[in-house]
Image (cartoon, rainbow, N blue to C red; front, side, top):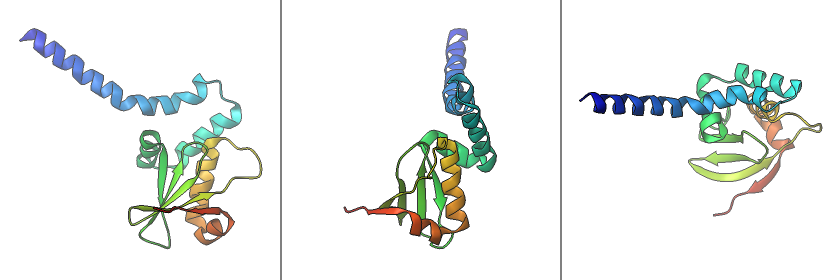
Length: 136
């Protein structure tokens, strides 16, 4: 009985450790990888801008889903690092968007940039982006 209880307790601690490891990794990355001051500040801004659920989604799925302010069935999937923003309507990817700043910015700042542009003025965001239609 004692041995099975210890094995079960060890298994529970491993599951808990695996569940929080990605979040701890995201929080520790700027300091472990020797990021520049700008990258550390960008990571701090990202954590301050996102809700805990959005931060968890970005960590676990590798993208942030932002609901369209004008189209209820539309969602934008902004990747954690460089890549296209995917536009999903009614559960189907309809296009990919390419929109990058003129100057080089840390990846965390680019996620914040997309989030604020979509939520602030979606129409201007779509006008500026290069669009690539997804064909099934």
